[in-house]
Image (cartoon, rainbow, N blue to C red; front, side, top):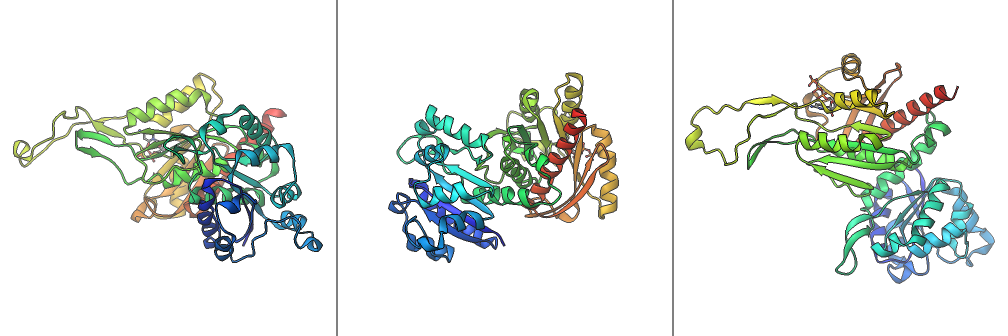
Length: 418
Ligand code: CTP
């Protein structure tokens, strides 16, 4: 059980903090809420106390004898501020400590996740941009707001990410700092790096209404994008027909077919420090998709579709990185029907060699245990022979995958330094 300190600042999204409290408590953690005085204009402390099962503090000058601002900051395992207003970012960046929340933040040495929400103009204002950069440079993880409908009739970046995404990223952030194998160097290996993840399953048209697809939901890839965000990376997700929300991910590109996915991967590859190919790519597409819907009356009892091979996007990316010396770390996925961990390890070794990438994440898809499910078991293998197992929720597996990648990257950087 972790102790989560949740700061809420004054903004219309303050009501969504209820979902964040729920998310952390349902995951078995305790939540202590510190709203600012302005947050309490948007949401009442009765609601916050009932949901968090804890008294709600907002006043620096009550219970002074317990020196609570110091205790709150010291005792927390994770601090989350959501929503964070533009005014809060300015005060935090300036190191002001004029209320209980900012006092606790200046005391704490635990990971801090800040989740801004405000109007687009305020988010893009040069002062806010500078404050966010200052805080990020100090190691504070700050999410980019989601894009979409804002308080008025306007739309744009500024929305608070969904509570589920905030909780997932918060848990990933906290576990990075507590994982034994995750050293201080690997914790910073991904900071500021451009981390690209492909996720979901491609669809190949047969005619205007039908396609060849697969069962991939994109859950594991989205979880990896969240864990990489928690590690301080600049994340782009290229999603093919996702069945899950991409809230909380800085940049999202949507594709449908393998050809579109290949085009987007090619466009981004030169700027990617890491490319994780979690997408389930159709190996074949219909050679000539029909422009009009196929009628049963004209097709009759047999319908033949001629398929042609799609390019192997992963193998091509590896080839380009090598020939153009791009320096990107490429991680492939292997969906195998292995049946046992031993066999999975063997198949992973074969696939790693075949694809030529730096790492492979192999999962066993026999008996439908993976697609659309919330749990996963993977075997991780790197080209230099390191390996690990991870089992648990897709969020837990994602944290292990990102830790493994960060660990391998910091080990590689160590060798280059010598
Ligand atoms: N992949 C890709 N392009 C394809 C097919 C797969 O980039 N046309 C990528 C996937 O994103 C994944 C990896 O290749 O990272 C492994 O995919 P998998 O389906 O396990 O392997 P295949 O190459 O299809 O080989 P096989 O089906 O023969 O096992």
